[in-house]
Image 1 (cartoon, helix red, strand yellow):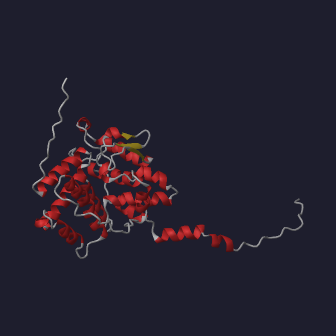
Image 2 (tube, one colour):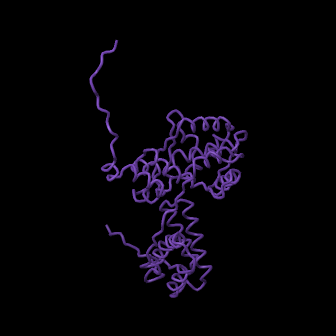
Image 3 (cartoon, rainbow, N blue to C red):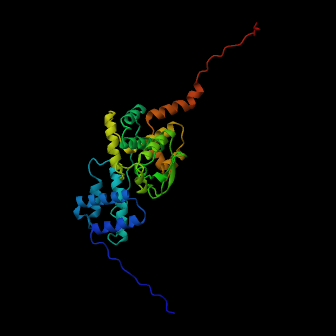
Length: 321
């Protein structure tokens, strides 16, 4: 019996950045990258090569350095650009386009996490601005409170199906396919949220469930995206007199209030779906007031030097008649 012969197939290197990007996106999709992640790759790679048409050449390194060194660029923007271009250029190296990645040796900038800490009264004002006499209003109020209650990502909440909701146990199942980290998890919500979800699900036409319309869908049963939800929230916030409010603010607010109310970082990490504890710590930048309050309460010096109230000396007891 003859041994099987191994055919060596040489792959043609991409001739343009568009060809390379198409192959890169196909690979990332096969690896399980979320649609939102794929869009981010495509948008940022296109933005780079549109600004530097000659970058598909040995001059790519110089173009990249200029792109990342623009005046006024924030650490967050710098990191987003590098986070996308790093894996793309590594892929280009694997395809034989570059001998070395143009992003080789470039490190992320340290950035202070943005503290989102809305006053409780402001949250009540935004909630009061959401009507309950329409399907859209009932949907938005339920989504607002669910997001605040369990810290679910907006993209995860908007992909929940009725079958993912367990009203009897007050919990929702986030499927691995819709999770940002591609790991499924369970989040819990309060009875207040349960009541709104019951009303919302009861208001839906039966055919929506058969067509697998998401729980938080449009008034026509179609899927919503994070941008549409943020636009809605900003309208309510403007009615409440707030200039800035986004869908992700509710996730931030959940994290901070969870700790303030006695929750611990470990369970918070699991509920929010963070891959590492470091991510949770960065997410939970407490305000100076929180630090001051915690310090005053836990200060060893305050406990040591605190003056005790003088105790009243008990004298001879008298019998009561």
